[in-house]
Length: 203
Image 1 (cartoon, rainbow, N blue to C red):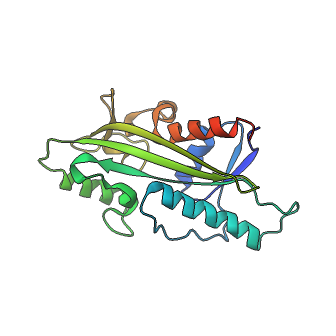
Image 2 (spheres, rainbow, N blue to C red):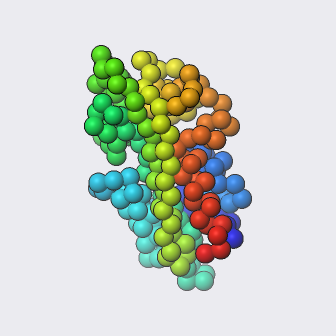
């Protein structure tokens, strides 16, 4: 059976809302106010997702009052964009590509500048989820969305690199897609579907 509730290790309200839509049948709640996200020091998306999920689980074990002695279901994801012409960059540094406190607009502007004049615009969005059951079983789910980088931003929806990413077999950016369509094809959607299939197998 799927868990009724799962705690997501993120301070990103957009991401929490997106996962709520992507994981029907369970309530997705953001991290508690008292939990501080660890520094993302991993070398891969999976490393960083695991760092956050493990830290949240440990926080519950050490600081929370657990009626049954077990922490809740917890999960974390790490995601970003990998651009072929940039040797897979910005990758795990996607959210801070233009600096530690960079905004989405600044990150997108740097990406477009770095690709200026380059004919190879191929890229992919990647998402890796790491989830822990109350008993400590680990589940890993991955998803990707291939596409190309547009010459300039388009669209009003989405966040991050959505305004400049055109999915494979589409002619518009992710930011121009309706929420329902984005949630059907996105890298997070595909990772969420993989997680749901694992959690629904009775383990």
